Length: 188
Image (cartoon, rainbow, N blue to C red; front, side, top):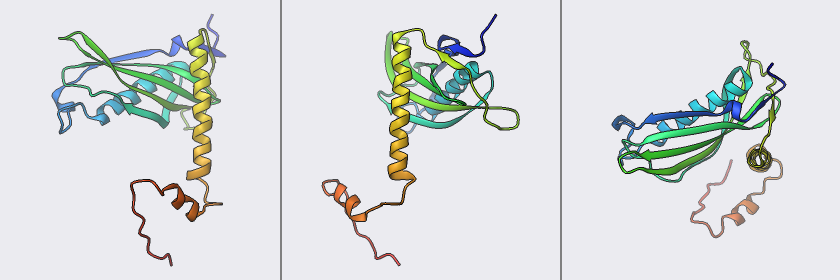
């Protein structure tokens, strides 16, 4: 009998493999980042849906770093699993690898974290099962997700959502040694 109060990380694991074709290439001849982002969104959805048993949507994408280019002809593997769960949210960790099958070379090209939420048929958020952690790496990934979540909240609170306490002179001071020129017209 299955326990739906929790699910293991392995129960959410998904791998999608896709051949990179010429129509996926950008003007530089490499695979367009948007293609890879679309594939990452697809694998994040699959992992979150497997964990929650419900329809899921992407609410944020954290740290999409393009570490190495992906070439036409590469087989791209996107490996995803739920790393963290909140009440209705899940953080899905994604690792992208590109394999040149002719040369037998596999390279790590991307790592990213997608936050997904589960919804019912009326578009209301629903509670997801807890996550059962079964290895030290799963514990580390869960704890890392909490740290990223906290840092993102602090950043949003300090810079994005808060206009209270904004000091133009403080912000200009932060830019003192940066590669920018400030030429502002007087505000009306």
